[in-house]
Image (cartoon, rainbow, N blue to C red):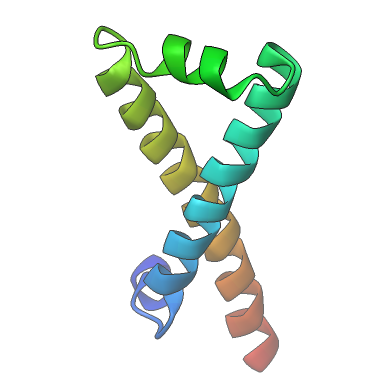
Length: 83
């Protein structure tokens, strides 16, 4: 069942777009809640050389996990409905 779902047409495209949306929304909320929408302070703290790799890995990793889980269950329910 797992391989059938991940090989379904459009699965990885959906994962990508959900991950991208999650990353954007998460960072907008982070800027608003943690930095009072002060983009220069946010950029100064988040894009420091020592934190840059961690920032990108955390964003890409969390976005991928979110996108994969949501897409997997969405496609799984569609496949079960069609049976």
